Each structure stands twice: as structure tokens, then as C-alpha cells.
Length: 97
Length: 393
Image 1 (tube, rainbow over the protein chains, first blue to last red):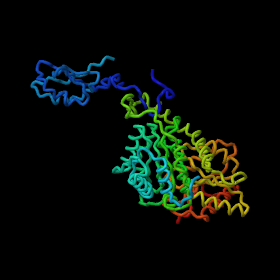
Image 2: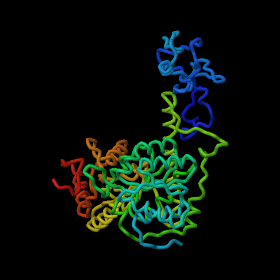
Image 3: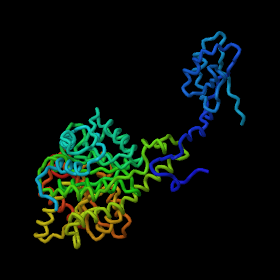
Image 4: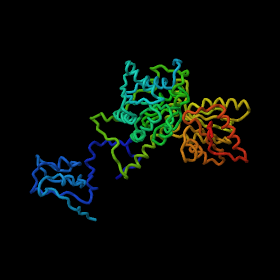
């Protein structure tokens, strides 16, 4: 339910702290997304350091995968991945219409 | 009782700021408003006021700091002019959109090019659609009085909108006149304490302001913003009346001078109103039914009140001290002519553009405008709608 102008707080105020968690910004990802291959990963965490959107999931110092709720599909993690073959590759997004 | 002193417009505005004693003054000096900033810096240096005075590297930064401080819940005042106000441009819209009650004194000055430091209204008219309330002053006394009222108007919970107090560069900012400075205590009592509804420094109640919104909410937020300045109409009237009851100088959207039976009415803003008033007196002596409206509030535009005040006239002259190149005359003319359109019997409305870059406007010039206005009421009239006063061809 979107609010009407009379229902809004004045001055663009949003009183709900931390509400950006509800906003899954990965919905506007471009046509490709990164895919994680754990077999070759050396857990250097370059992908984590370079990701502009904190979309790399790390647990106990280990790369665990990608949070597609926020990943924008920029591909920086794939470019920065130093392993051969790369542990991250860009694949075409499957869109269900 | 207030004290009669002799002050320039800049000094009278600085006196008001001294009495307001804002939490923060972030300002960058620029002619002709430099002295305001200089006086305030001196007050702070001498320990006369406890305001936090910040001198940033530009007006863009000055207004950014004002926005930051106001978001933190501070009472904020600044001063600027001309290119300085122009450099604040994108921040003006942000201050208004965030509904931050920032008070800005503007010693109105021409815009480059050609570069010029003298008075006209090009700077503040450029900020016309930024969402700020705009008050204009005829002389140092009105500049002082407007600054004090501006605090009350902009901080009102229904309004919470930034406000600009204009006074003419040099003619008002640098001319010393008698000014009644009211008692410090009485001014402080009149403006009261500021209780901001939210503060970004309050970590116990974290909130977000100014986050990005897209097609789904921007329109609603803008309409919500408009409501603030619409509600200021009532508050401006109320505060002006209360100011009059307390200090003896009553304020409204505009002042009507000898308009009751006037057939020709001139609408003027700022310092030229004094000259126009003198012309009205002279022409009344000569038997001409002339009158004057001195507009004090440009935003919100008091169209209903102006329609009421002008509907009986045969012709209305609108004196603009700015231009809208390529437009249908200058901005004030366009707006007043448009307001009168809904009348069944409309007065003739002529535009008189004057005083750009500080060009003098004399009694002869304004009389010439009244005579053109009189001419326009004749059936055979074939004159120009858009006229320039005291301009060489």
C-alpha cells in the first residue's frame, strides 16, 4: 500500500531506522549475474573487497556465495577473481515472464 | 521600549541576528551583504553571542552547512547576495525539500554578465521557484523587522520552510537610516525557543531524511512540500499582526497606499517603493487618482489579496527589477497579469522594467510610468505592454 501525500511525514522524513533492508535492490540487476564455483576458490576475498554493494556472502573468513537480493550484476568480482580458472563467472540471467 | 539608532541595512540585519543569536551561522561574504557576515563574525569573536560561526570556502558550502546544522536541529541564519545566492542554487531546493527552517538575508544584487555589484532583484527572482518563502524590505527598518519575523514564520510547525529576506543592495544595505532596535529580551521573547521536531544527532531516535525516491513517491513528497509554503500564508499574516501589536509596526502581504479610490495603481517591491510613494503624493496634489501597492511577500504569492486590491483599478503598472529574457514581460508582471485574468472586468496591466544593475529610478521615471498607465486606459491606446524606465536607446 503506497501512501498518499497527506499521509507522509514532512521534509522527506522516514522515521523507520534500517528500513533499507526491506528494499531488495537486486531486482534491477542487469542481464547478467555472477555465478560462484567453490571448487577453485582460494578465499582471497578480493571479490568481497571490490564488491560495491556488499553482496558477497562471507562466513568465518570464507567466501560462501552471492547475495542476489542486492547484487547488481556489475561483474567487478569476476574481473578481480585471481584464480585460474576463475571461481566467479558471468552468466545470462534467466528471466521468467 | 526600542532604541532609535542610525544603521545601514547590513547593520540592522546584523543587529537582528545578534538578538536572534542563532545556534549556527555559516556564511561566505559577498558584496553587498559582506558587512552582515563581518558584523556577526565580530559579535562571535567578541563573545557577544555564542553562535557557532563557520566561514566555509564558498556559498555552496555555506548553504550545505546550514542544511546540515538545521537537520541536526539548530536554529540557522546566513547571508548572501547575487552570485553567492546563485552558487547556492541546488542547495536552496534541498533546504526547501527537506523543510528546514533556514533564514537567509539577501542584499539583492544584479547577476553577471556583465559583472556588476549593484542592486536589482535578479538574484532572488532566480530563486523564486526554489520553494523558499520570500520577504522583501523597503529600508533598513523593514529588513530588521523581517529578519525577526522570518524566524517565527519558518520555524512554525505547519510551515517549516526556509525563508529569504531581501533588501536592496547598496540602496538599503549601505544607506544609514533611523532604525528602531527593539530590546534584546523583547525580541528573544517574540521569537521564542526553537524546538525542532527531529534531530539527526539524536541517536536514540534514528531517522532518515533526504533518501532517494523514484517515480513512486517523488510526486507525493513534492505535493507534501507545497503544503508547507501554502500554510505559511496564514502564519505570515498572524506573525505580522502580532509583531505590530508588540512593536508598533504592522506587517502584511503588501502595503496599500492611497489605493481606495485609485484608478491607476503601481505595484513595487523594495526600496523603490519610497520613491513611488512620493510620486503618488505629488500626483494626488495634481488631482490624479493614483495609488501604490508595495509587495512584501513574493512567495507565497498573495494572489487572492492582490486581486481584491487591484480589481477596482483602470490600469495597473507592475515595476520589475529583474527580467525574464524571452518571456512575456518580467516575472512579477506575468504573475500579476495572470492573477487578474479571472476578473470579469480586467484592468489594463503594463510592465515597467527598471533599475537593473543599480540604475537609479527617479520620481520623474515613476511619474512617466504613471502617465503611460493613464494613456493605456484610453480607447485609442497603441502603446507597449512591456516598457523600460530610465534606459538609453
